[in-house]
Image (cartoon, rainbow, N blue to C red; front, side):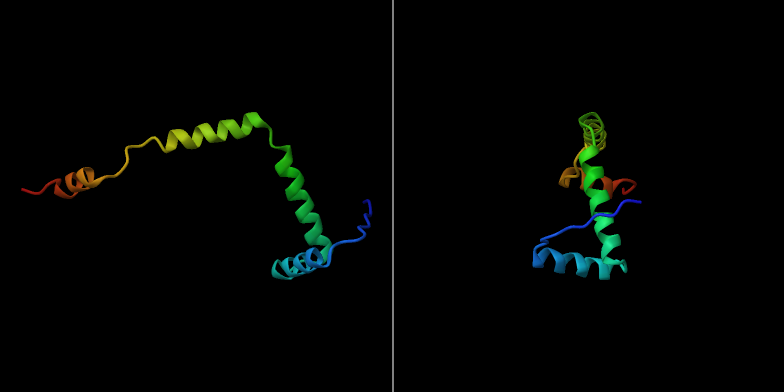
Length: 80
């Protein structure tokens, strides 16, 4: 496995990384690797897969909206 040395990390970034590592119960090194992996995975998403996911979500949201008329009708089903 390769070794990477990072120099001149801003103090605030270092503090954030250290805090996040503690919250996730990871070493600082492991936390940096996870952050890098997540960052690179996001950038690899191709436009076609994103567009397919957007279209899928849109079709799910095309259901009729709930309004007062529909809510009253639903409440009155089976009532004399």
